[in-house]
Image (tube, one colour):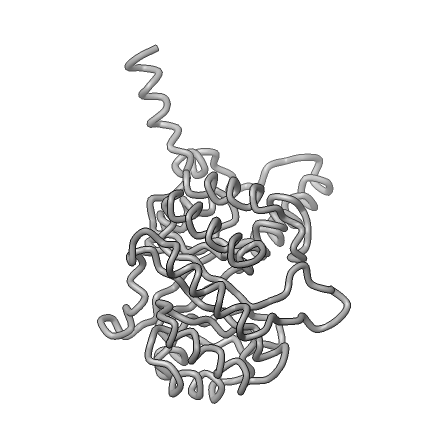
Length: 278
């Protein structure tokens, strides 16, 4: 279970960095975070070199998350996409990820796969509400948290998004996500509409409002999700590293120390196994 409401005890939102592989999950834990997330866009990019366009199968997605979880003992919130189909598929998705050991899962109202040449479409209120009811009924324990997400703020308008968030709360979800909010006032309107925890998706460099943690705390938003912040930095670092290899005759950087990654891979532990048993 993830303690969504740390705001009331610490005065700061809970931060969920997004992991894209087992190593990034382990490094999130080593950096002192208390939970993390796994999202579809980062998985598609890193695992398959694909855009976030509904091109991953459920099996590919589940297996990738299972591998990521090998790297960390922290509680995980997984992006459940749109349930990978209808209400039946949503039930299977809940059962699979709860059995896998995830702590929470979010379901959205986007129609997948999306058309990349236009604004995304969202499902009817009745469809997403049915999926969330199915998800809540399918979980084996209330400790497995169900999060309702609506992308209506940028696909339709803010009024529709807030209406949906309020309906999710009525259904009994544990938290809500409304990506694509335009400014702090939009978050304040959402805060006035629901009493359950709010999760902000922070994606700098897009038209979406990217609030600071202090701004979120002032509004009363409990959780800040950074779904691709690590992946973006990794891509930039790989570009720079590849350019350095190409332009410097393959010489390693001056500060290169292979022991750094060995700490995260726990090479010493595996060496000890050899020493003790081989």
